[in-house]
Image (tube, rainbow, N blue to C red):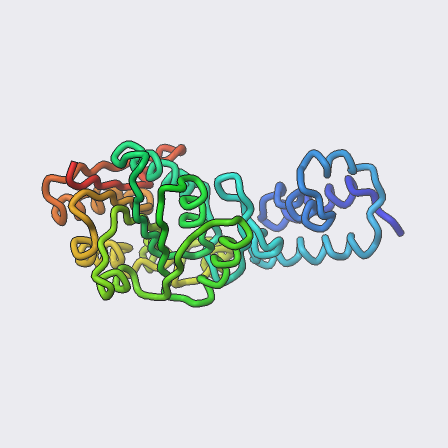
Length: 288
């Protein structure tokens, strides 16, 4: 028995909503099953018949999401800064907030470095490569390096860099240690490190805490373990004139800002809110 696309979509939306998931996820999963590039294309096909095999694929995808698998891991992709990135269970799913971190870091680089300067940038915590690949593609002055402790994450990010045509140097290592070992100095360090306090991880939605990699979520007992390490390592790798950009959890901005002020006296440090009005980014400009 064939089903029209709009009927299957209505079923999927209701089933998701009844099971505590976002009904809108039905559209993303439907587009994935149909192979539609755009929402418009899917809407134009709403009255087409859906063959039974595709309907079963949709049902399976919807059930996986109800059971707690993120939509992005089912479809294998997520949009970031206008580009499609491949994702899987080895990497954190890129968030819109991180787009703002990239946007503001790029603006600071344009403000503080000349158009003819080559600027060395290190993204710490590669994940899917969303930050490093985007920065390399958005500004061709940048010499972009990215470090991750997990080889599995680097493999995902390398695939994204190759597919999107970004020149990024991938380094397997722990935070800033590789640059310290190479005695290398950097113009910019940007990072979206794990910052969720361990006690808060327990109350996260199962879609996040049980499916996304714990190494990309846990910031230790109070959420600041990686920022403390950065404060020890940053002075050893930054040039006198440099920029630091961090993503932080809501409510962590002033604490991380205070850490940077103590580490770099005289630097310009400020906390920036995201589009939702939450303190989400902290920047330090050194040697102005």
